[in-house]
Image 1 (cartoon, rainbow, N blue to C red):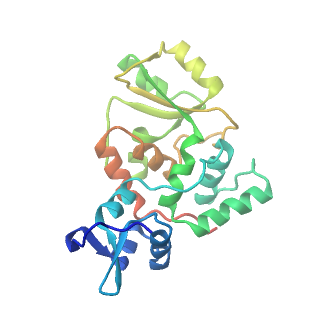
Image 2 (cartoon, helix red, strand yellow):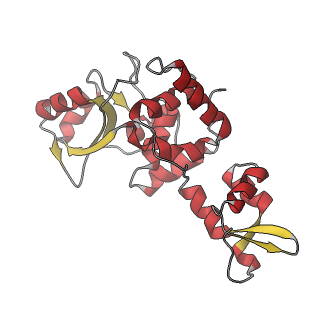
Length: 235
């Protein structure tokens, strides 16, 4: 169990307050303390958690173990959104439903990092409206925020999911070039396409994931705020 070098009550929070900030049960927080995941100190017979560790965990949630495969990541997203994930076996669906029951959604987010490859490109600004209307392109991140009533706008940027095959076609048709100052962000799905055929906007959880990974602090802040009230479908 990690122990603070000296008592400084200003740096400590009670277990109950830590649990509320992390949206975990007090039992789960005590387990994290016991496992050394949260630095803590016993003062006058009560356990207190290091405030900075709680704040860091709020900003950077984590789940032990390796990230899910793309198929598993999209399966968990689908189940969290109340969809069927037909590409999964029954046993895989059961395991992912158990993950949703046993963990807060914030804890699961790092395991979903392999869902797609992020590609940053530059297009002529006049091409962005046409690009957004292309078939087999699903808006997400900054482009889908307003569709989910999130408090962030970014005019002049287009962000979407595309298949591996489709990204090459779009790069050719719109002369998209890699750029350090992109106005096109494409999340390339290498495996089975996880979206319904006519879908134009990604589910809320996908949009939040992309905003949380954005370089723009405003985007991350808006996503974190929305995540506080996000509830997965009943597993």
